[in-house]
Image (cartoon, rainbow, N blue to C red; front, side, top):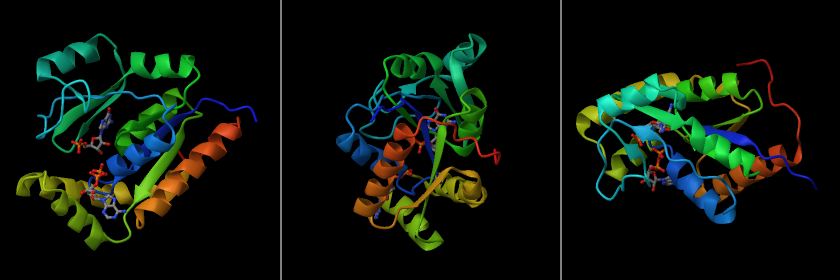
Length: 197
Ligand code: ADP
Ligand code: 5GP
């Protein structure tokens, strides 16, 4: 069956498992376009520049904003993050679907520019498990944890406006649900816009 290259946006609170799920999806779908976001936050141990993110100073980020290089950018938690327009367009033009792992503000902005983007929200099985995962990852200071959890409360309220909602309880099952959602929207070439956004 003919497939349509789609722009997928995966959002959800910090620590819910977006990175883990998207990495597993990529193993099943090596054809998916990979875009690297820019950020002003510092690299965590093991994160490589140009792979995890394009790590930038505030001045560099501002220069890209002024040059119009970002498809979208947002202040998330305590830093700025943005998707480079050139990377998304290159993948779509080559006929590859693209997955962006970006925050809820970014998702809303992408929807404005690409009305047919598919918005996927990843939810935790419970608030307690979200806290446990974020703490268990061991990457955040107490202050950073506090900010991320406060933001999570607001982010979770936006789940009903997404095209697809997946509860990341069992990792295997959530990965399969994500892969099936991608298949469904790529097989169906029509619009996703349901008027909720
Ligand atoms: P995010 O990218 O949304 O911030 P991560 O992918 O970094 O989240 O996941 C946060 C933590 O939760 C990681 O330590 C990860 O191994 C763990 N995790 C992810 N999915 C699950 C799951 N289904 N069950 C248990 N732990 C999970
Ligand atoms: P982290 O600092 O944990 O890597 O990411 C923090 C948040 O920033 C996550 O919700 C992540 O999805 C979001 N994010 C990462 N890249 C982008 C981007 O390019 N644009 C937007 N709007 N959010 C992003």
